[in-house]
Image (cartoon, rainbow, N blue to C red; front, side):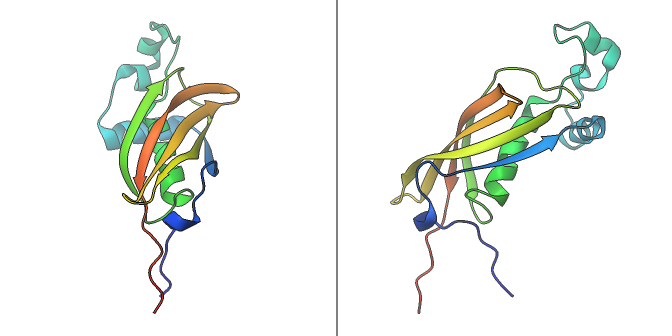
Amino acid sequence: MQELHGYYLEDLDIGMSASYAKTISESDVYTFAGISGDNNPVHINEEYAKTTPFGGRIVHGMFSAALISTVAGTRLPGPGCIYVDQQISFKAPVHIGDTACATLTVTEIDARRKRVICRTDVHVGDKLVATGSGTFMVSKRPAQD
């Protein structure tokens, strides 16, 4: 069986980036609420959400963070990396039907500690909706026998 692995530490360079985009459906929001237990009415109750400054339901902020995790675990650094830390600021709401695009960009590589730091941004169109920094543990390439 072939081993599944993303980038090794030696394969990464500062400035490398990868993205993942998803159009978020009403079903996605209900599923996320069920999985996370976050049943805040601003996400699942349209009548209540209309009374908020958002004027309607918004997607869970942590859904955006989950899209960042998708990039990290499937594209960059990819399978085999371990999420160590995430700092995130939510800048604008995401609405049902929006297409959110998460992008990770390598900003620092600490070969000694086997850590990679990435800028983590989520956009809806040109609007930045979440931004931060994530740290990932990335293994070195195995020694060849």
